[in-house]
Length: 212
Image (cartoon, rainbow, N blue to C red; front, side):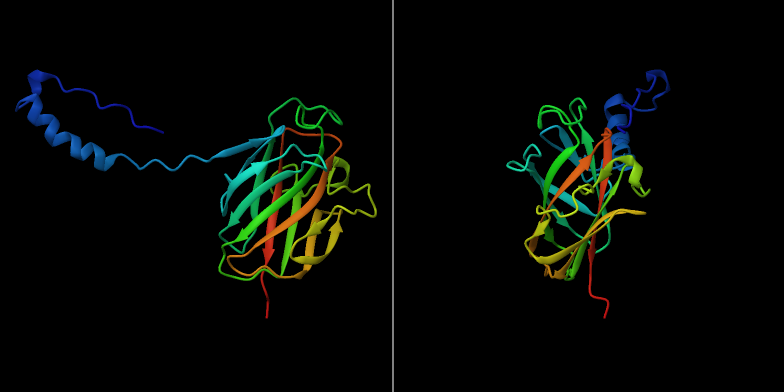
């Protein structure tokens, strides 16, 4: 929050001229004002916005509307090997199964393009969906990694050969049998479905490092 403008001093109480008074007071005011933090940039594409407001990484670009032909592509740089959380909000009306890009329809083909800037190799990478921050997405909330499809063909990664989905008690998608070295990038493609769309939901991204 910006500090209010300094109020003037009644001239009858000044012991020296106003010009000299301001020369003395202004340096002290600037020293006492807190530096403003850089504003969080919210990226918008299709019917959604994407934010790195919860920290640990930064978004460098977004594109797409969320269809199979034109997926939502989120470009990121992770500066840590600990979990980070992507915040997603609907920016247009919610209409289940409506036209992608014009409404938030609950069907989101996504591609996460991640640069590993953590200085550590990643040997697995997990995504977790949350409708409420820090709470598991349970079976009945309608949000999942395409849970109804038992044999998905749209879950792929540039760096990992296999994946594993879990739906209870968490909605998680784990990519494994691969590696992302420091300063290298990896892409992850998957489909998110939400049959009871909400205005805000979260994706926790958890890069795994070697344990031995």
